[in-house]
Image 1: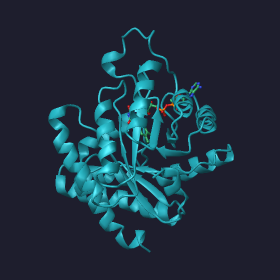
Image 2: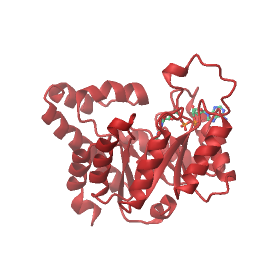
Image 3: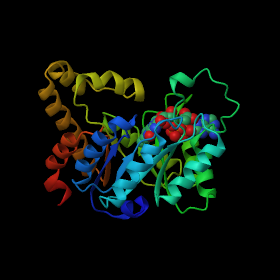
Image 4: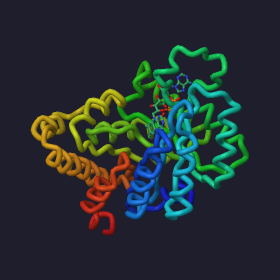
Length: 292
Ligand code: FAD
């Protein structure tokens, strides 16, 4: 099923993100986490992609299993940075042949070990070019893209970032998923600004449950997200007590989600990080709310 169809529905939905294994040895552990998350009946599941293509086969394998074995719609991520047009074309063909219906088209970030490589064979600068190639492939993909309520870290300013986001949706991106954020007011302000700029596609907020203190620094480094004092206090107080931090992180994410639902946002994507227990705990907290 296409995600654009799911998003037309007014029913409240929750979807989850999983990541593929980095090596074949880890495949069965990831498969079993995916199985448990799929059994929770999310509206869809997304599968990340290693920029540069390192784990590309696994992204496809996992996304195919999610839809074929568990009958949950899947969204396969695809990045284009440090890739040739030829290799991306092959990936698009493989997605098409596997019956993948939904693709999150991303630029990606250059992997640190490839920073000094010769870039002459790298054909892409921005996600918009990948969206154009997906559209031109002849496959009827539902295409999504990424957006950044707190501005993409490389953008010189918010205005430029939103102008390029508009190019992305004009190129055929049918929905957007946000970078994680920990203060909902930043998301509401972003939504207002992009609607004003004429971007009308559905925007799915991405919520990251922080369930251990080590995740905090990594999440902030990756996303540049603002950490509200209310959240920092939780980490300061419970960060050294793993089960307390897990409970507090789940409660904080649940609270963000309830506030989003209460303010008219119907679809939430959770960065579940291959943790079925976290996905389940959040859904349990929302059981009456989702089925209202
Ligand atoms: P783009 O849309 O290309 O934007 C990148 C920067 O370029 C922005 O600053 C933008 O304003 C600017 N820009 C865009 N077009 C132009 C233009 N024409 N001229 C000048 N500047 C321009 N990474 C992975 O490796 N694998 C994943 O699976 C993955 N999944 C993600 C899922 C979500 C929901 C999000 C939010 C991010 C994900 N990422 C993933 C990270 C993402 O790849 C990085 O944030 C990356 O830096 C930007 O990717 P993008 O697709 O947003 O890039």
